[in-house]
Image (cartoon, rainbow, N blue to C red; front, side, top):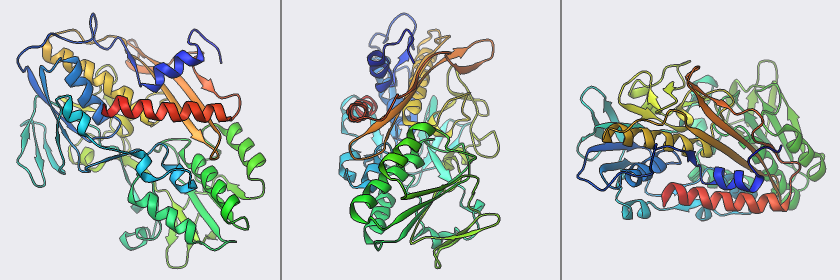
Length: 426
């Protein structure tokens, strides 16, 4: 879809997760003595970006402490390619050293409590840390209790792999070990969930692997939604043209029970069996958001002021990424988390340095899906803050989807991933 953004210009804008005019008048403030301390919880696409940009846009005047439990960043985008066999987990792994080089203090620890009234956080191993402003970018945690039988024992073998890392590798090993002629059962929760096209990309990647290595095998997809929720036409075309007869897709089939030992799952009316069970549970804001009482809606998501990303439940705390109650047509994506971070960074620096907050942030989303080891496709959109409605709305006529999957789209996707990793981590 054409508009005043050229395709190349849009992808350059969105690939870096750019936020338009975040600090009115200039990009940074003059170097000065410390004017405040910001603690950031979570070192993913939202938290790491916020830490980096608060430090940069304040020219070092704001002390920034990033608390992240993991010692390395592992990208969820592209992790499905590990399941397909065209990437290794090391290809998606980055360190936090460059953030330290840019002046961010990185603490690898677990946050156990947030004391919003006292403006401090407690850690599992280290001393409590005080703050002037807090950023919480906790990602998602899983509502296992919504699926009967999906207890701690079942979770050892029935994997979701919806957080990139050890489960990604374990699920790949299950696929490799499966007999030729086996069934891979993939269940998709009802939206909203992290990365709307992600499950369908995963289906494509696993199909690509099976077609090459285990051609007698099948994929059974139980989708809790009424239909494919993102890039429907493009995915269906890819499945029909590349993997015909390999994928059985069943909408309106929400998994309600898991029997790990028997390799069975149940919906409301039927039972299904698979050799490999990949059950993706319903999701909500990460556990620390619940502990900090940031969750406001459906006992799942955190409502925010979209001009600043400040929590509507707890003043002085800004919430980013997948944990937020999404605005209209806003996906839970890495690109959006990166953009949320820049809205928050600009607002926080403005608040701490006495400058006005940007009254109308504009952000862009881009999401690529790899449907084979050679081809990909995209969806894009632009979103602008509406002062009257006090929310962020999609810009009419902006964005769109690929005309078709292609090798060129894969090249764009590869470049986008490198760009957003660099923009997030330095």
